[in-house]
Amino acid sequence: MLINGNFDMAPFETAGAISGWVVGGLGYISERQEGATTGSYGAVFGDGGDFQGDTLSQSFATVVGQTYTLDFDAGIAGVRSASPLQLRVQVIGSATLLDQTITPPEAGSFDPSLTAFQHYQFTFTANSTTTTLQFTDVGTGNAYADQIVDTVSIAPTSSPTPP
Image (cartoon, rainbow, N blue to C red; front, side):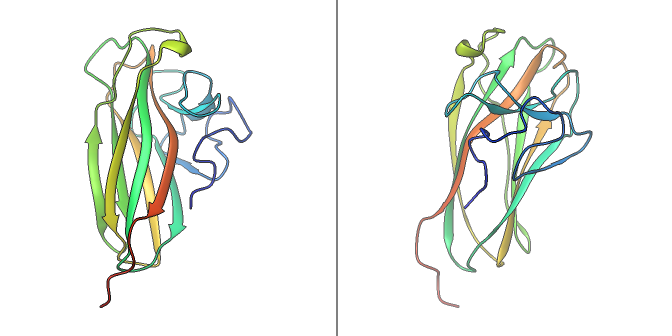
């Protein structure tokens, strides 16, 4: 249902440009090789400095009353210098369906092969024909650390509930 959920479509290493996604906030998000769970690239937040409030979103078609499962992997690359870095995950239809703030694991390393990821799974029931998934980076102290998201998917899990 999502375009480029594995973040392996060009352009790469270009702040503010991720195929299939809308980058918001200051735009410090790009596809980089700082760790990934599928392919070679992941969506890297806070790219190039100590930033927060950047958003990555994508809208997709849904069926009202249908339950969906959101799956993704998240981790922290690099070494943070302040409070733990977090990601806010929101799913929005005609109202907010999901609003969670997660704290991805961190390996404390600049080696992309050592980036630790955790798998996250959430369910929601659509309340409109178009729904938006949005990730937002939370927390400063990331001049040398970045939040990474990879392998994002949304799939229906049941038949629509009759009105």
